[in-house]
Amino acid sequence: MAQFLLNILIAILWTLFGDQDRFYFSTFFKGYLIGLIIVWLIHQFFGGKFYLYKIWALFKLFMVFNYELLTSSLSTSRYILFKSSEVNPGVVQYQTKLTTDWQITVLTMLIILTPGSVVLRISDDNSTLFIHALNQTEKENKKLLSSIKNYEALIKEVIYS
Image (cartoon, rainbow, N blue to C red; front, side, top):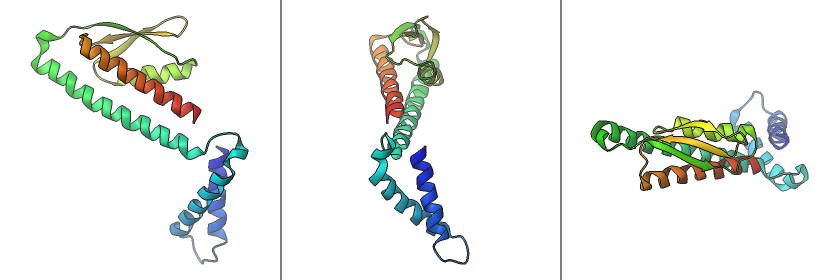
């Protein structure tokens, strides 16, 4: 957060010292880019990674979620419309490596928002998720667990970047 605020401060100062009669967004944007370079050069003094890494990780999480949302919506629709007799619902267990409550909550919400799967319960020690899956074949279970592992890795990337 400090890196971002410093970058905005540099952009504002660049705009103010630009000796222009009014505010131009292009001048602010140039100042922001110059601020990015300056903050990148001194980011190790803030004790963390460069702040754009976190924004990039959030963008990747957003894009992966949208991809999973689209593909699972199409798959769920296909099962409902054309293969309703072949649906084999069941419960899948997933051992999570996430530790804090809000990380597990984010993972749970991502799973719930994806059609075809619902988190039924979380164990008392927050290590196991019990997930209801629409179709519990070997192939579908692997896809579900793979997407959950992907979510988990992206959540960790957002936290630690």
